[in-house]
Amino acid sequence: MADNYLEKRYDEYVARKEAEQKARQRAWKKRLDAYRRKLSETCQDKSGQ
Image (cartoon, rainbow, N blue to C red):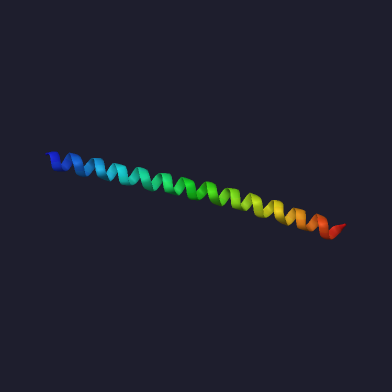
């Protein structure tokens, strides 16, 4: 019984860590996309002047 409990707890831990990692990756991509949009807008503004 203890083995099943520990295995379940470990599986929950791994799932939680994977979810956190995916959330960090989504946040990073969102920030990167926003930066790229801002950079392209700035570049277009400078070339238009």
